[in-house]
Structures are given as C-alpha cells and as structure tokens.
Image 1 (tube, rainbow, N blue to C red):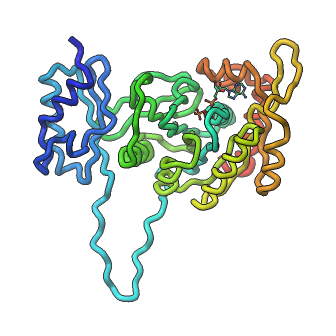
Image 2: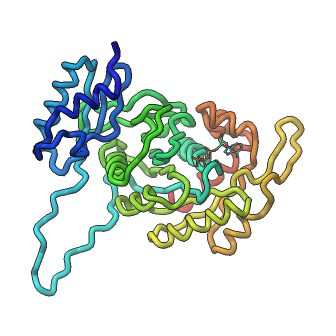
Image 3: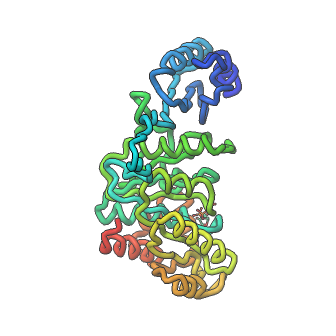
Length: 351
Ligand SMILES: Nc1ncnc2c1ncn2[C@@H]1O[C@H](COP(=O)(O)OP(=O)(O)OP(=O)(O)O)[C@@H](O)[C@H]1O
C-alpha cells in the first residue's frame, strides 16, 4: 500500500520537538508532500542544530512506516539576533532588503488583476532574455496558481542531494524554481503568513541559482503578502506591470503601482497584454478589451509603455503547451513584442 500524506502527518505527530510538543503541533512541518512513497517537507526552525535529533527521528519514523525516501529541508526562518547595541548615541543599522549572492538583478512581473497574462509575459520575457545570451532565472512566486512549470515545460521534483540546497530545473536557457514544484499540481495549498515567508525565503536563499544576470519573479496578482515579503527580503531592482486595456484591470494595475512606489521599488514600465485580437484565420484585428487604456494610464503615471502584446491564439497555445512563443515561433509577429522588451531591458542595463 502506498504511503498517504495523512499517514505521514500522523507519524510526524508522534515525534517530539525539543519543546516537548509534537513537531506538527509545533508548526515545524511545512509544505509536506507525499508522492509515490517519497516524503518531502520543509522544517522551519530557528536553529538547525537544535533540531537535528528531531529531523533524524522523523526520518527514521517515516522510513519505518514504509517511505521510499525522506527529504527534509531545514529553513532557518529567523537568524539569531545579535545582542542589542545599547551604546549611547549609536543607532543599530536598519535591516532592509538584501542582495542575493550571485544574482545581479531582480525584476518582479506583477499585475493588479488575475488572468491578464502576467505569467505568459514573464515566461516569454525570461526565454527572450536567455535567447539574447543573458543568464536568466525564473522564480514562480504565484502561490495561488503557479503556472511557470507548465509554461516553461518543466516537470518533476527539484532535488536536494545534501538536504540543504535545492537544485532548480532548467529549460530554454532559463533556470527555474516554482512553489508549484513543491506541491502537488492538483492540490489546493492554503498558505499561511509564516509558511509563505519561509517558502519565499527558501526560494531565494536555498535554491542553487548559480550566477544570474537577472532573476525574473512571477508574482501572484494583487497587492498581498507575497509582494510585501519579497520586497522586504530581497532588493528588487524594478517591477514590470502587466495589464489588459480594460478599466477594471487598469484600476487594479494602478493599485499595484502604488504599492511598489510605497515599497520603494522602481517601476520599469507597463506592458499592455491582449491589446488587440488578431484572428488566426483571417488576420482581422479587433480591440476586444478596448484600446489605448494602458498607453493613457502609463502616460498619466509617467511610466514607459514597453509593449502592446496582441491577443493571439498562438500565444496561448504556446504558453499552455510548454514552449513560449518566443521559443516555438521566435520569428512570428506575436513574439516580437516580448523580444523587443527583452532587448530594451538589456540595452538599458536592466537585465
Ligand atoms: N496575449 C495573449 N494571447 C492569447 N492568450 C493569452 C495571451 N496572454 C495570456 N494568454 C492566455 O491567458 C491565460 C491566462 O494567462 P496567464 O496565466 O499568463 O495570466 P496570469 O495573469 O498570470 O494569471 P494568474 O493571475 O491567474 O496567474 C493563459 O491561458 C494564457 O495562455
């Protein structure tokens, strides 16, 4: 009989944390995943050394229960704070967002509203940058609907041979890691605040990104916890805002821009997606969602409009088929918008 997630959880409830409470109750078990007998989860702890016994107890118990393999990754979600400096007249330096070693720049791709094509833009942009010879990473932080594994055509579990660093996956020259690869595709994940912080922190600091010119972060839509957490944890070099031309999408895009302004993240520009519909049969052009909305908004807000991407069946088929249009049909008119943005970012030294 194959081990189930509930059985694994039940087993972990019998393992005591150093505090005496069981490790599930103590909130140590995060992102538990059981797949074909392989058990993986993240242990969120302050000090990994203090939890080494708990970890080995958990490994032994799960193996005894019949797990084919057990992979536990420890995350130190809070560093041991240094003793407070009480020296008179001296101020402790504020702990702000930090540069991630090896990663030159981080660009967030955001949208106010869901479904406007943010992930499609992010994947095409990443592939277009890679095609221009840049070293590109993609962090899919869309916890509510991670779609980069599908769009970039990668599957399988990221491995962690040493139990500390996670090896990302790679396709089309893009090194990628997605929160979606830590969970089952059909499993709804309810992320609580601390869990989200832990997972994001892990994606940034425990994934072996290697040397990157730019890391693209595909954010969830809106102005929530992920955006705030990311801006607090990592130094964001800029944000790209994707919107369709409809008023509702624009209204939300404006809120997103406001949020980035408050977080001190520069807005690189806006991208109008589904700008005009081009019929794949006859080439007839139609403005399904109105026209000029993003141009006007960008002008009003004083941010550049970087591209107007048409609504075209080929873009959807390519994105949903695991080979973005800039990879599957790089010379097509539909791919040009993405390629132009990539080149503009490189020319401006932004990617
Ligand atoms: N320009 C386009 N032409 C045709 N289809 C598109 C275009 N842009 C996106 N799509 C399709 O629209 C759907 C939604 O796109 P996508 O997942 O990129 O949106 P999103 O804003 O990231 O959504 P969510 O907020 O839910 O993550 C996908 O099926 C995608 O293939």
